[in-house]
Length: 271
Image (cartoon, rainbow, N blue to C red):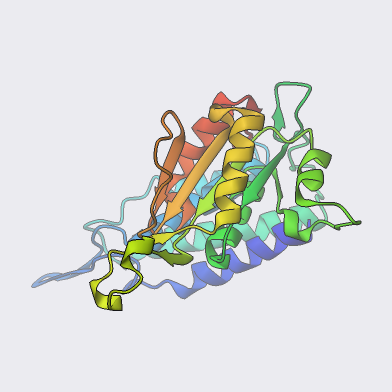
């Protein structure tokens, strides 16, 4: 609950940071100033608000109605009134969700949680990561927002267990996200005596991430492992039929595709 409230508070702060001059590619004409195409940050913000509101509240709640009305308004080619209407509605919807989570006076919260169809699996998913904390937290945030429980192993108590034993402890986890990020620079042994600028180098994920990638493919099957790559990182070779998604800035860019993979794996996503 606390983590979700923090996400909502962050979204409110982010929403308040937008204004008519920075939410879009503003159009300046002889007749006035008009909104242009949405900038990625504003488009992502709207999507995140819609997702967290619809996944948390019943369809007949006032917050859902506020979001629905806001997202029917066109800003491209219109003045500041259209933008401010959308901004005010989305922020007010988030504030109503925050109140509902702490009090739920009107009984608007959804009671169901995202689950896996198979009784062998819970609503938990693994996140395997390297040194990119920003991407790790972004994926964790996204997974939480769609109603699933992210499991990051380094946060779990060791209790004298090896990494494999910690994997096996979570036998009810039915999906894994592997984050491939350019954490190390590698080159062939034959290149070691060359000057650094003459070596043919490539950026690679950490070896433990590749090991855990293979572990989950073997344990869960290819359809239950999704690789999210960011930056100029080398992908494992000689592996076909695996799921790869490329991330530029935020995991929301691949949100719909990720939800589709989770649903195909048997997860009932409530959005």
